[in-house]
Amino acid sequence: MAVEVRSGLKYGTVLSFAVVLLAFWLRSPRSVLDERLDAVLSSLLRAERKVGINNVARPRVAIGFGGCVDIIVDGVTLLNKIGLQPTDQPLHHDYIENAEQLAQSFAYFFAPGAASERFVMNDTLFSQLVEASRELPGNRWSVGGNAPVMAGRMASEGCDVLLGGSFSPDFNDVLSQHITVAGNTVEEPDIHLILEYPSGATWGQYTSRRANRYIVHSDDHNPYLDSMEEFEKRLQNFKPDLLVVGGLQMMDNFPFKQGEREALLSHLTRILSSASPQTSVHFEMASFVDEGLMSDLLEFVLPHADSLGMNEQELPNLLSLFRGSNVTVLSDPNPRVATVLDQMRELYRMVNQRHKEAATRRPLTRLHVHTLAFQAMIVTRGSQWKNTMSAVAKASLTANRHVCGSADIDTSKARLIMDESFSVSRREGSQRIPLQESRPVSCWTEDDYEICVAPVLVCTEVYQTAGGGDNISAAGLVLQI
Image (cartoon, rainbow, N blue to C red; front, side, top):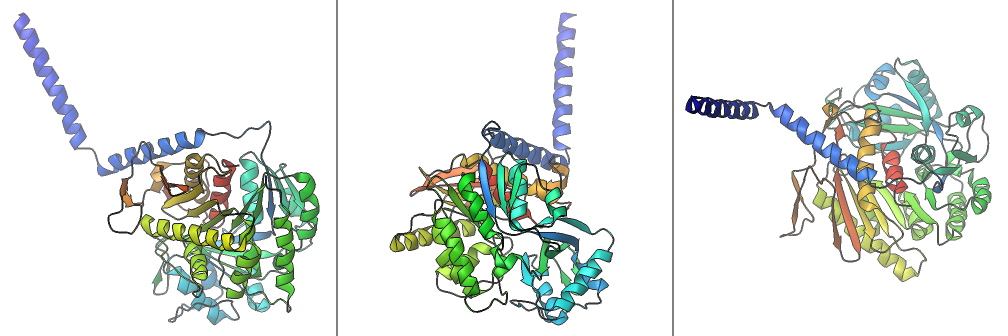
């Protein structure tokens, strides 16, 4: 009898094992993928939570300049509404003067899915676009501009913020209580039209390779940095831990009078150069095509910034200028990790070499590049920037939260598009690093700096791409000051 029981137990154990094994083999690829995404998410959240904000002594951040009202619409629907036919000639234009150039410029960036922003010189055309946008069902209005968006993110993450910008009374009412505005009150704020489109969207013969946006504006206030004087007055007493400069792309191809732009940037230089050595300075890049302005930024702004933030389009653009080449208008919207890291190393080296030769006060000690697939950061060892691994994880999570429009990340609406493993450089024989679900943030040291790379859980049900870079950069900075 005992033998029979033991045999029965043995048979039952084998049968149970066989059922478990069969269930494992019959698992759908989707369930395996879900488990992997859940593991990556859990690990990124754990990395983010390793560092917290001290609410007793909230970090103080000063951010300039400008602001606007964003009208967010479906780009293809808007162009169809105004009767703009798809062009058979995609072309780059530094600025937009007529409807034909708008069609050519939109098509140029829409197909590869590259972010772009252009100044519209034709007031009639811009007014037509604004009116059509207001009539579109499903349009959304929000606080816009690099500085207000970064300010909003940093305030929500636990910072007290001084924001330099000229806003309408209604605008001020929707800002966080932790944001203090330094600037003028205007009756009519500048308007930016955000032409969003999802991955796979079609316009005539064109199909977008990834979700992104095409932005047009015709600003009156922002190009003049007209909050700068009031911002400067408040800075001394505010005593920020971090000073952030963004929104300077509003100067791009704007019809300034002779010497006007240089005077404004010289004033900005005085503000940056007078910042305390204990105050870190971050410059947020944007979509620039005006080579004169880019050269001015190299002279007036970059020497005074110890941190730079940019996307995969802006990195090669800035790098080409340091190399003495023309502005790079369009780059690969989905670059490989090795390519980006090599570009970052070169930019880090060239900026610091230039600063060394000019004996400027602030070397570049932090470089953050955000792409669709991953976040990458270079931080000088021994610098004031801390918690790099957690900061990169937070930046990665913020990318999903913003684009999906939810603080809670749903892995059923996300995917990983970063490679299973990546090479740290395009040089032959370079080390390859596998993507580990339990430790998705990879960090290592080289020369005098640390590099960290984190995958992004790419949102598949896009709510909004505009403002993504500002939210991502701001979130990464929060944990490092």
